[in-house]
Image (cartoon, rainbow, N blue to C red):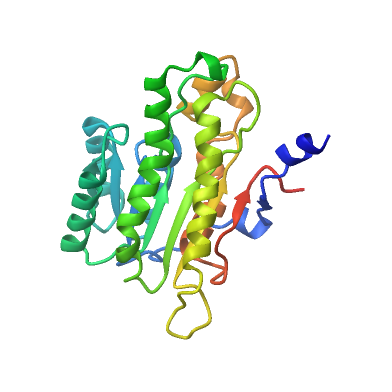
Length: 271
């Protein structure tokens, strides 16, 4: 019984109605640089469009060049600021590749105002005994190692922002058959909370709020390709599109609560 309760309590904080309904005011992200990993996925694409529409310079990071180019063109049409894009093979990249990205961001923009980790590799939902080591390594690299390296190399850039934020996309799956994905997502939340704890003593110029807010958000089931891969028999109408779930993520990005850091927000735990 104690174990069951523990599995149901991942230290999540329910989102508020205000966070759910939050949208970006026109021009609210003007002159701000937003880096989004996994930008061409379902959630990443939705977020990229919302940020570009609000005036942000959106830096798109993803694995496939053709998808990046397609999304780049869309953002170039809808936003006043010119986007940028980075091909990042998260299943293979090591410290050198992330250092190169950080150097490019420093050279081009001088800072990063927000970093959102939206990348995810589902792998194969199966018994742990059935997972090939090559798949385990790939999923861990995409879901965990890449987020760690990108975060660490971008910390100096985020510290140059007056309203810096780093947000991790969470998904609590501690039960059977979620494979490497389930393990990686639990580890990702642990990394997020450690990083937030290590940085919460660095305050803004007024000495009132964290200089950098580091939080996580679990949007729950969404109508994305990853969800279809995990639940191929599920009807499309059974889940909401990402557009209906990104309000809390936008709220974190905008730091509507300046004091909030180290929180794991969840759409599904609200009453």
